[in-house]
Image (cartoon, one colour):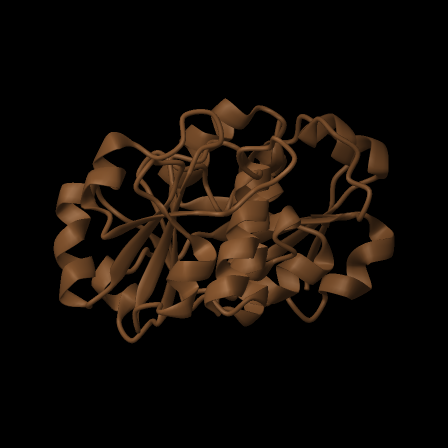
Length: 263
């Protein structure tokens, strides 16, 4: 390992890790710089196993042994706990971060080729929900995930952490707007099932009983739901039957229910 001891929180070598709590800043700077932040040694290990390349590490001394087999020729900045907190803006409890190079996004056609069960996330702004939905996709057998242009970043550190690193396990890509993505989905023979409340919706039970061979479950943001265009292009509108005066589930919970039913 190329170990470098750093005690000054203003050291420019730590710039990739600075002020990670500013979500708006990270949304702009991480994709533009081609980087994302992986947090905890387990998540970093899963990222490296998926073929992602680290640019550098920021670790507490006690965590050096956790990353020595992952670092390659990337520098490892060893810092006191208080310095890590000053740099990142939060307590780095698990003691290991890595700035990772983002892999190039694959075309939609490649990601859905051969997939029998796809999850599509449209304009979901909460990183926690995105991470939880990816965990459901990995655990319940989705073959791939597509996220809309305005969906929160699956590689934002909170998404990664909530997903337990499964964002590296399930093939995914960011799709273009619906009108541009439809051709790839139609050519792949994917049936679009939009989860929404509608008068003409079929229940998830009925849809699952005669599910198409290849289906994509489309989920929208909790406040606004799916866009009008998403509902227009859907082949079927599907609803999860509810009781107790509750009309819908959290989007992450809904993704788990739908994927389990259609697994």
